[in-house]
Image (cartoon, rainbow, N blue to C red; front, side):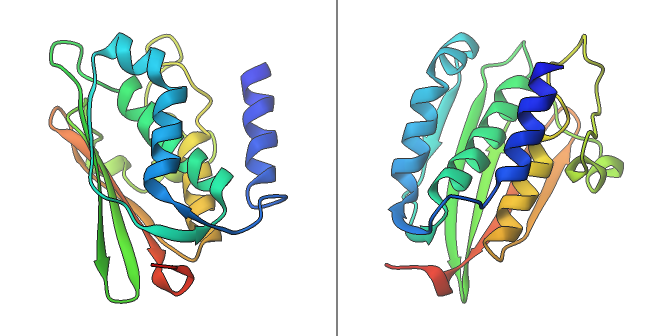
Length: 172
């Protein structure tokens, strides 16, 4: 119950008291990886990160976005196979398109739209921990920045979460 309350409070604070700053997204991701190091080590995850841009963003919110996506990749891994995660960014006209990909358990295509809703869980609490708020956070953060988020996945093959951030805020 405490986790649920904390997550709801965090959700309500997204974008508040978090000033926009020109920051390296590689630096943000590296800080998130440092925070997640015990979980990364325990899962024996291999994480590859492409060169990410420097952008004007809400740093705390973007860190939470990457933390949620990486935590989900670690949580929903296939136990019989080493976890591989890749983070990429491509500039496409007026935005960057980011991808956080893994080789985890995947998500049934019929559930792709549902997973971004509040309290939407695809698994029971005994099987996988969590409150069902993480991806709603991600959607709110991306929308705060004027972007979009979506998922492509296949059960047993892995998942890729894509999101965009406008370059109009970008300071290259």
